[in-house]
Every structure is written in C-alpha cells, then in structure tokens.
Image (cartoon, rainbow, N blue to C red; front, side):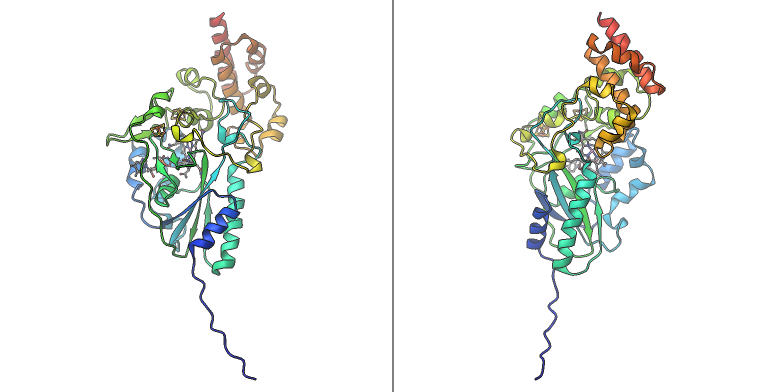
Length: 351
Ligand code: B12
Ligand code: SF4
Ligand code: SF4
C-alpha cells in the first residue's frame, strides 16, 4: 500500500487563539499593536527633557532612547501582544497604601507567569516563534502601545482607561516575531471632565502646552513615596498627607472607575490595604521582609516605608502616634530619623 504524503499545513497566527489564550491566562483586556516606530515617542522625549522624570534616572538615561521602537528590544519583533490584568478589589481599604499594592504578591511576578502560560499555549497553536515578555520594567511605552492595541484611551490623569473596565489594571506585553493584524485606538472619552486635575492635591497634572495634560513626576506623591530615596524636602512631607505608598486620588475620582469590575485573582486580593500606621511602624526588619518581600511594598525597602509612615503620622496630627514617632526618631537611618523628628514637631505644634 502506498502511503499518501499529508501536506504540512502552515500554522498561521490567528486572533481567536490569542483571545482564548489571553482569557484563559486571566487577562480581561487584550489587543495587538504593530512593532514599529512609536508615534508617541516625541511626547516621551519632551517629558524627559522638561525634567519631569525627576528622581527616576532610569527614564532619562541612555535607556530612554530604546522606547522609540520595540524592535530595539527584539530585532525580529513584528507585533506586540498587549494585555491588561484587573487588580481592583473590594478592600479592606485605606488610602495610605495604594490599591495596586494591596495584594500578597507583586504584579510583575503574577503577570510574567500568566504571560508565559499564554505564550506556551500560542506556541502549541502557532508553532515556533521568537518572543519577549515585558512587564513594567522594560524600556517600552506601555500605555502608548496599549492604546494602539485598542485597550483604552489616555485619560487626563495620564492613565490608560478602558470602557467598561476603568483604569484599575496592569499592563503587560509580549513582543512576537509573527505578524498579527493590529487593532486601532478607541475614542478619548474624557469629554469636558477635569475631576482628576482638580482633585490632585499637589497639582501634578499640568498642561502639556498643546491642549492636553501630562504628569509632572517631580510633583507626584507616587514618585515621592515610592521612587524617591532618602530625606524628602519639608514641603513634600507636608503635601504627602496620609500616603505611605503611592497615590490613587486621580483614579479614585474618575467617573470611569465608578463601576470598575473586581478581579478574581487570588494574588491581588486585599491583605495589605487597611494596615494601620501603628502596625507598620512597629514592624521589625525581619517582619517587614516576611510580610512584604513578595509584594510591591518591598520597593521602598524597610527604611523607606518607615520614613513614609513617620510622615503620614506627622500629617495626621494625632497624638496617639507620639510614642511610635519617638521610637522612630532614634532610628539608625537618617531619613527615618529626620522625618520622625519633623513629625513629632508637627504633633507638638498641634498641641
Ligand atoms: C515612570 C512610571 C510612573 C511614574 C510617572 C507616571 C507617568 N504618568 O508618567 C510615577 C511614579 C508617578 C507612576 C505612578 C503610577 N503608576 Co506608573 N509607571 C511608570 C512607567 C514605568 C513608565 C511611564 C512613563 O514612561 N512615563 C512617561 C510619560 C511621558 O509616559 P506615559 O504616561 O506612559 O505617557 C505616554 C502615553 O500616555 C502617550 N500620551 C500621553 N499623552 C497623550 C495624549 C494623546 C492625545 C495621545 C495620543 C497619547 C498620549 O504618550 C506618552 C509617551 O509614550 C510605566 C511602565 C512603562 N514601562 O510604561 C508604569 C505604569 C504607567 N504605571 C502604572 C501604575 C499602575 C501607576 C500608579 C497607579 C501606581 C500608584 N498607585 O502609585 C500611579 C498612577 C499615577 C498616574 N496618574 O499616572 C501602570 C498604569 C496602568 C494604566 N491603567 O494606565 C503602568 C503601565 C505599569 C504597568 N505595567 O501596569 N508611574
Ligand atoms: S497619583 Fe496623586 S499626586 Fe500623582 S497625579 Fe495622581 S492625584 Fe496627583
Ligand atoms: S477624571 Fe475625568 S478627565 Fe480625569 S481621566 Fe477620568 S474622565 Fe478623564
């Protein structure tokens, strides 16, 4: 008997497999952008040259230019798969720690793992291809790519907003050496609203000179409490209010977040949302490590968190924090000591 040759049908990358794999991996939002010269790169360049990266040197140094084109990260890239992962939960909440850090696990790890699971499925479906997974830290203009991939529009608060998902979601990307049809950006739905601009306590959302808005990183509480090391200038301490880690105000007030869906991701369920200042101030370095090593809060390190706790205690003007602050004012760390002493003076002034 003669065996007939079965012709090898080339596997073509298809949107249906991508959509199914993205959903199975836990991504509520998915879309495709071309891996090409980034039309928004000049916006980024202008932002950096106007000094708005502030203390975030990694945005302004030689790595900045890599954002001009995703192919600088992977020469063979032809498409960028863009994914959004919800992190909104029902609480327990407080505004001291921002929402993205309430969970027990860092989103970088969760997203990487899920993106890898999605890629494994696509390798099965499409055959071999080159890829590179990126979450937050790679020199990519993530919001611009996600906008191009149809995931949302750039709000006046500078966040990527999706109708109906709001803006409480993380972004992740996979650069792939295959070509998929790209999506297109949805319309901007900010309309005449300017709630975020008016609500920002530090006026960090500033006009961009072309009718739009941008975030001045030097003025943002999120920068001060997460990115800026050491002793903060006194005005920044006072303006940080009760914020210990990040700030969500310009998203809290956004009407598109009013009915934002919640995530079912176990790793993002709120375990660190409502932690009291006194509890944070009392942590030993070992306890800090055990509790926050795997969470976004690890970024400030022990001293950075205590520094911010001291600031928030001072701004509360609540005498119940006096003892905690006295203890922190004996810290070996210059910033913790300086902030605690300043906070004690603030409590005294109140008395
Ligand atoms: C640096 C950084 C910060 C800085 C600066 C933020 C900023 N707005 O620039 C600080 C520390 C302040 C910060 C804070 C926060 N961050 Co942050 N951050 C980044 C990071 C690493 C780079 C952002 C960047 O390049 N900024 C420079 C400016 C110029 O770029 P951009 O804001 O992205 O703007 C681009 C587009 O919006 C577009 N664009 C801007 N205006 C316009 C106008 C028009 C008409 C068009 C067409 C395009 C357009 O062009 C710009 C250049 O590409 C990204 C991850 C990444 N690799 O991209 C995460 C990222 C933006 N951050 C994120 C998050 C979650 C936060 C916080 C919520 C955390 C918190 N609670 O504290 C806050 C939100 C504050 C806010 N309102 O933006 C998410 C945002 C998800 C989303 N839905 O938008 C990202 C994408 C991380 C991730 N992988 O999920 N962050
Ligand atoms: S995160 Fe807070 S400080 Fe920063 S722009 Fe938004 S409201 Fe202003
Ligand atoms: S608060 Fe209003 S202006 Fe700001 S991002 Fe939301 S819809 Fe846009």
